Image 1 (spheres, rainbow, N blue to C red):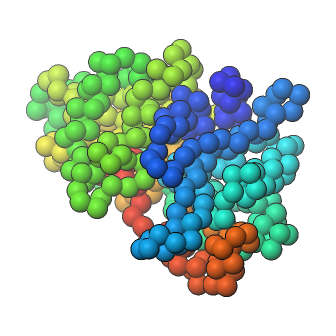
Image 2 (spheres, rainbow, N blue to C red):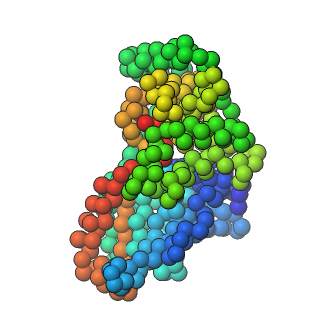
Length: 369
């Protein structure tokens, strides 16, 4: 289904992580009681829908371990905007069929599914649950910055704060005075480029942040590695020759890599997989300079209509983005002990789950800092 998923993703996916070369990064052993799987729908041999999930067996009481139940989330992290991926004419059948599979065949008692705000799949999901007497709670959970790329770079640049632009130009001149400054670009398809990008990331503030006690989050491994970045960098291993190969902009000073940005272009949207810089050069603002070069190249090329940061951070506001949001839906079933307990305390449990979700830290997987 490699080619079919690619065509479906390019036309309808809210994230490039539905591309098989990126999706594969999340299909791996995930520990005891936690397993990934996908639900697909075909019509006359043609793929018309796919959704990837991870189910987890939990206990309502951890000590002692009592009342075992199964819950499910989308496989992709919330920060990359997961959803059901389906052709419009099959939407209702696929979404309802996927939910029937989750709460029937897979045996889930609860689900916590995050979709982009305004997803056409959300009303179908809510209607299906309510017709079956299942509780559904929703909450706004996160947002992401999207920069519109209409017109030439000069027009877009004129829309930005003049002090911010002058600061970026001054930073570039300072770097040029410091040594031989080069900014290279291309596709991420060789280990040489990957090594340079990883060298920058190892010296970024995020490396220490990820390794800090209690700081591991969605999108990073227990060892502190950035799963999202690795998925982008090693995409070529699963999809050699793909036209969706991630692209990079890499800044080097006297041959030493100090900043980078990595994107995937799909459906006229540039998705910013990661941007970072060497913390030792922070006073030169190399991340801002690299982003400016990347934005100028993309806007002047006319290839993209917008650029999605995946997250909403303070530094991104300088680029005058539109803020798009995501909503989490907590669904509880009615079968088994967990269903009866949830039904008895549905309001309290729903509020507790969504309160915790609203207050959990946002992933730093794509921050520039």
